[in-house]
Length: 68
View 1 (cartoon, one colour):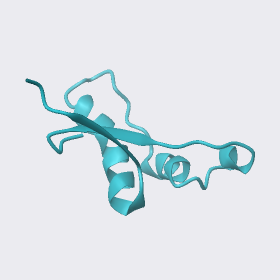
View 2 (tube, one colour; view 1 turned 90 degrees about the vertical axis):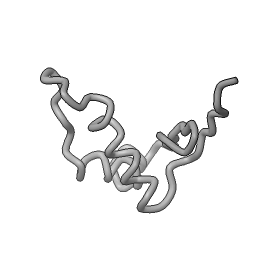
View 3 (cartoon, one colour; view 1 turned 90 degrees about the horizontal axis):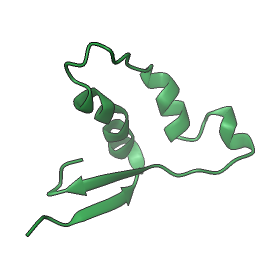
C-alpha cells in the first residue's frame, strides 16, 4: 500500500523556504535549468508582489512520508 499524500498550504518561514528550495531538489544536476532569484519567488509566496494588489492566490506543497 502506498503512503498517504498530504497537501498543506505554504505558511510561515519554514513553508516558504521549502517551497523555494523544491525546484533546486527536483532539477539538481539538470544543466538546462536556470534557477530563479530567491527574492523574487519569496515576494510572490509571501504576497508582497504587485500581483496581489488585485488578485488572490495560495501556494501548496504535497508531502508523502513527511517529504516534499
